[in-house]
Image 1 (cartoon, rainbow, N blue to C red):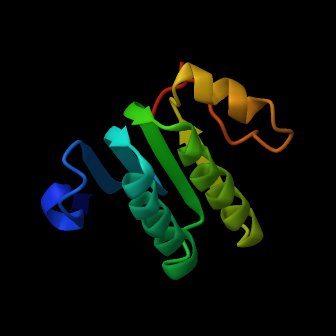
Image 2: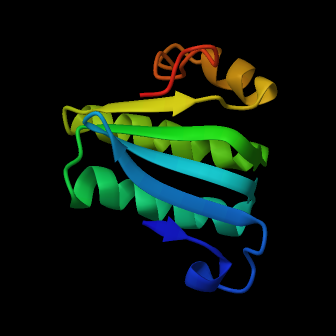
Length: 119
């Protein structure tokens, strides 16, 4: 599934969200500016994947994303949601400033080292 500006509304000209499966993991690739409108969309996608479809392993690739600090709550919430459902949430390649903020939290073991290979 791919969500682009035409799919999600006029205010998201610089955001693409692609959902695919790779080796038993649902991978959500975010490309572009993840601002308030974008992270509300992403929160809905992640909630649907974890709660609606019951996927046990969901990974978000942020290697090509630009984040606003407020977007971090989306990932913290998704990680907690996955854990409650017996699943695993993985955050791949967050920007350096986001890595520091997330790793400072005791429960942020779901933030992967950016040097790890993608599955």
